[in-house]
Length: 178
Image (tube, rainbow, N blue to C red):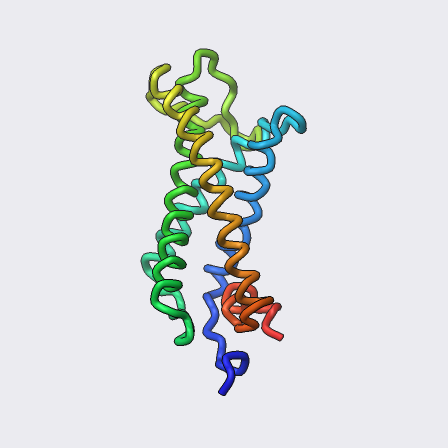
């Protein structure tokens, strides 16, 4: 039996929704964060980051109470370990990135407004200027790490789809199971 005809055990609809919603928001915020001098958008960057934080907290709670489908049997042990490591690193970054950004805004020498899409004010974290400085440096460094892991994650998905021609990507993108 070829790998192509193995049955696909998909993620749940909730897990798929979390994945793609957060993925779009993270990529959008990476673009805004990297190109903010050229395109502006910091008024959107902050509430999008806070949304990623809230959705990630819900996603982690979901993930801890709902086991993901097992990887197909043809995935080698080192690839399994790498996939799990990258996924948990992405979860950690989806929490650390918004928190360090929040620290940066909260402890900056000039406090700029922090609202969620203008609907309500978000309280500042109780950090001083040193905490704000740490948040700034960490946010920038973690942003580049996030970009690298997102690119790695997308490359791995495309490798499965285009080179290996297995159905691993269809687990999270059922429309591609053709």
